[in-house]
Length: 390
Image 1 (cartoon, one colour):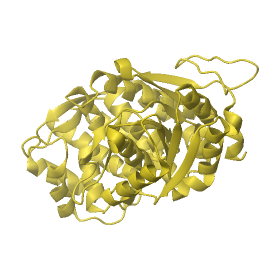
Image 2 (image 1 turned 90 degrees about the vertical axis):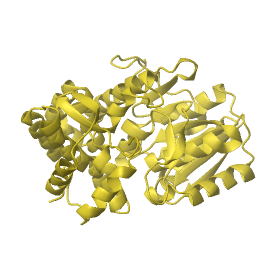
Image 3 (image 1 turned 90 degrees about the horizontal axis):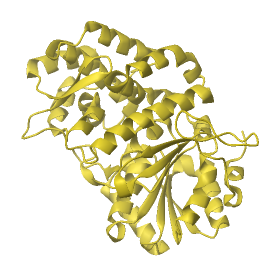
Image 4 (image 1 turned 180 degrees about the vertical axis):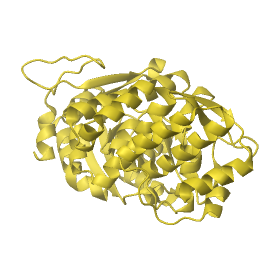
């Protein structure tokens, strides 16, 4: 594999972008995918493909960035941190790297305080930019720091995990966890741009790579039945990280999320469809003290929600079967550490979608369509949670 520093040399003009579903570029250079998140004056591009990182220095220079505070974790910084800082410095943007600990435990108020201290010592002003370089945890943490530093500074997302590319990097949700609930302290703060370079996935551990398909299957079952068929047919190629298959699926996932975000930026209603599988998924993460990765927890949540959909929304049993097959094709949910059912059930009411203590479930009606705001009897929830954890 080529050293990452070469990908950012001097901020040179990289590959031309293409509109999603089209190809562009010349001279043999590979084209990038481009999805636009349409939010009026806050619209922003998501660049997708091998070489997307080459665009970062030039685009920040064009945005007149005075400086760049690069935030990454200790797993990613060694692979990509030096290259990103060198690329930005090469186009005249004063840059410095701050490293946080890896994993969900970094989404804490104490870690946030450390990031803000770094920004202050670095001298990041309101013309500067925060660069979130890493997975969803780094994106959430650095994005929230950008949202509150000097009452809001610009930031870009540079996701280096498949899960972050298809989920956390798009939509503007940022934040950290409280002692008792996930993502309960945060803000909606949209990035300036997203750079999803598929090259970064080459170093991603297999278990972490496959876990991301929990979120991708979520998109298929809740929003796009054609994507479900694509996943079924392309599962072997996707498991092998075939770049053509991967770019197509990643782009489609981002398109779907971008459409939902554009229609309901602050989750007033329609955006709740993106929480399919997350009610039980988040409860499982909390009950395991975040020992269960997000994608695998969501996979368990999807299995629970589909079964509740059959019982409460008239969803055909075939949807459960199709979803289970898709998850199994990517080894999901996989072996999980033991978790007490009682602790999962106790964590459910802390879900952010609850209204006046009442859970609002997102459940499938058919393949590619879900219903939001469904009330489910406690006895049904207990029975299904027992089933999916057995």
